[in-house]
Amino acid sequence: MWLTRSVRPFVFTNEYDQRLPFSDCSNLGLYVHIPFCENICSFCPYCKVRYAKESCDKYIDALIQEIHLAGKQHFGKKTATSLYFGGGTPALAADRLKDIIGAVNDHFVITEGIGVELHPDNVKPDVLQILKDAGVTKLSIGVQSFQEKYQRILGRTCVNAAALKEALAEEPFETVSMDFIFALPSQTFDDLKTDIDAAFRHGANHVAIYPFIDFTFTDSRLHAMPKKEKRALLDKIASYCTQQGYVRSSIWTFSTVENVKYSSMTRDNYLGFGCSAATLLKDRFKINTFSVEHYCRRIYERKLPTSLTTHFSLRQRMVYYLFWTAYSTKVSAADFEKFFGASLKKMYGMEIRIAKLLGFINEENGECRLTPKGAFYFHYYESFYTLAYIDKMWNIMRKEAFPERIEL
Ligand SMILES: C[S@@+](CC[C@H](N)C(=O)[O-])C[C@H]1O[C@@H](n2cnc3c(N)ncnc32)[C@H](O)[C@@H]1O
Ligand code: SF4
Image: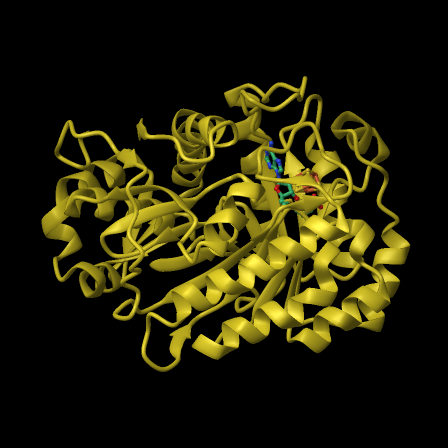
């Protein structure tokens, strides 16, 4: 309320627009959601269903139609920075990614590569070859932990690190990221350090350590780690990575060199395709239905599968921009001014002064950079936001294909 200078909540309604005004958006990202998994993990909040070939093929036919429905709204080919496939487990449809990328290429020119999320079981030379042939340049592998103890806690099977290394050596990619979940019960700094070292030794050049979030609607019996312990762990692991010479590319990601990145979130604007995929434009945020069946039905009626839309006030959009840009640990005053046509100092000068006094940020060369303390509080606030906003919204959307209205 303070930052938006208003008591107006974020209101999402099911009215939707067939038009998507993305033509004038610069720094546009693309996201494609494939919601199929071989096994469903109890802790996972994402929109996913059990894999079956027939329903997956039907879904992908609809997905390609959605890309055309949206893409043809721009005359000519629109430049997009990146294309990310997430899920679910997109590699279960590896043989169809070429068709999807072909549909995307009919309407967009992608300048910074194509990324795919993989389950460790997908990391095999034949699958990697299919992905490479389709034009994929970045991989993100959901390792979670190399240690049996934590895989058991998470209800997943052990990852064969040697097989992973071998497959990645046979089919190298520009970016190989590995995901770990941290702040699991009884997890120590040594556990996490061992996992990160193993990732870099087994073919990763980027790691993401996601703090475990205990979503209210999942079946997981695990509880989030208390704040104090989590902060000590995050501080220790961040300074360990910095000492090792790794670059902190966002709050939870570290890479071997500066230009290696895997992030579908830090874009000024993005178009999302597939069920549960979100779209962020200059004036609005919309989210597709979570129901695979209703998604396909809408597409066959030649309608966009939008479930909910919110129209931003200018200050709401600014808060949204600042929140996701700060995720990269820095906010540039020049970029903010370019996007909004208004000076960051003029809009949020007082907040910047307070954040500096509290030791959350440093200001240098026109950039506000998060300190380690600021990074922890960003994470802390992000967890709060996830539980207060995303948890509430996803919990409704996984039960109702087109809810009438949600106020956050
Ligand atoms: C779509 S999955 C990755 C690809 C593949 N489906 C897999 O599980 O290996 C995305 C990532 O989200 C993270 N994740 C899932 N549930 C989470 C939770 N409750 N808290 C924090 N991170 C979570 C995991 O690290 C997971 O690798
Ligand atoms: S963590 Fe990955 S494999 Fe497990 S249910 Fe979620 S998306 Fe599927």
